[in-house]
Length: 90
Length: 248
Image (cartoon, rainbow over all chains, first blue to last red; front, side):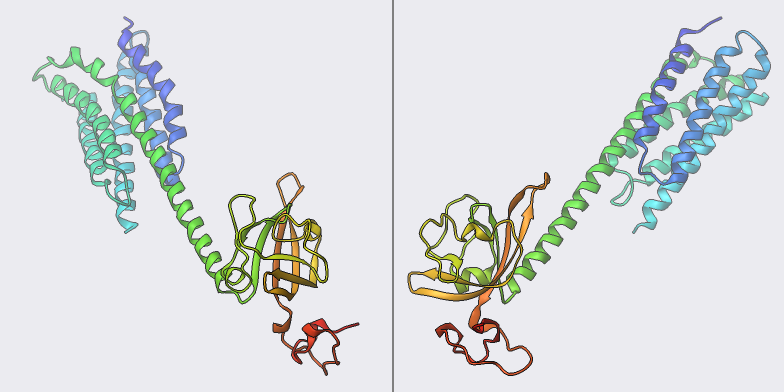
């Protein structure tokens, strides 16, 4: 069954992801790339969340959780690199 | 613990770590306090979602499940706002450092101009001095002005030319052409002072002549060139060192 909050989350993500990409210019290329991949994983998890209501429920549910946890790991790595670079500039 | 539940635990740890690192990245050379806070808040939003899912998968409680979707919606606006603030701050820092660099260049150029032993003046097309270095002010009484009124009483004209009709400091015959070591006179209340003058035109963006850069010294202060100095007939050339003003 379609959840409107899930659809809204997906639309919001699709709208804001390009804005985030644009405003992250000037960041280290690697960090910017990690942010892009992490946001892509979150968007993918939103897609799987909606799609699991129609087809391959178990598989897509597992993929949803895998991708969201992957985004968490990538965000943690990107934040760590930002922290390191802020200290290395000293 | 289900298969997906274990990934939720990984996600929970990951987002908490991301929030902690975001806060630790705050500093003079890293993120600003506002950016770090927004990023950390965004990550904690997703950490809450992972926490809710973890509790549900562990069979502890599903009470947070109804709230989860609405909390999750806040992630992208928070993250986008933090990213926008960080981008704006980078632009502002770049502007500040550019302004500082430009000011440093300006200060260095002014130091060079004011240390020079020659008069350096920038004029407009009417011959009015917009800028005059310290040597021009001290030695010749030529002052720069923001407006178009002549400051001081010094008028600079080609050698022997009367000063009537000269609106600004310089006779406008020097505007728009390249001049190299020509004999000009600085006319003051005390009389005429011989000068060696050089000038280059200044152009506006559209290519039109906007003024001139004029460099001049007293003709008697020119250092001797190679070879003997011939006898000069004009009064201003009596100085044996003045080789640049010899009569033809």
